[in-house]
Length: 105
Image 1 (tube, helix red, strand yellow):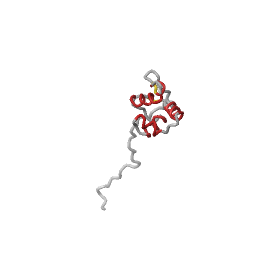
Image 2: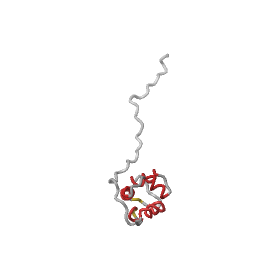
Image 3: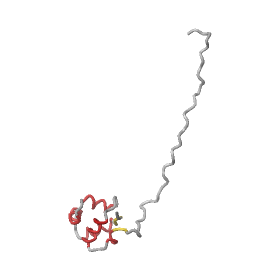
Image 4: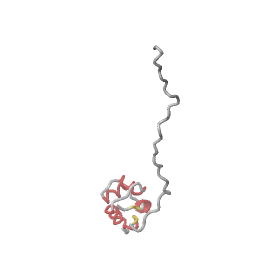
């Protein structure tokens, strides 16, 4: 899997006046997949990105980050959730009352 440079793919597609369906037809995938690549929602198979690069007449590195180039994270990583520590059950507020043997019920 390669991480596509979505805005570059979209810009090249629009420069040619193609709709997503046209690019998808040319590289044999769905237009939803093209949308997700352009928006950065998912990565693409190297073969698909290579076909897109061929359609645009550019190198694969122009539309996808290589192993040496990783994209900057969109936001800073945050701390994960703290591990759950179980709390003990609440203690009874009153001790149970004892029934004495001398009293009749």
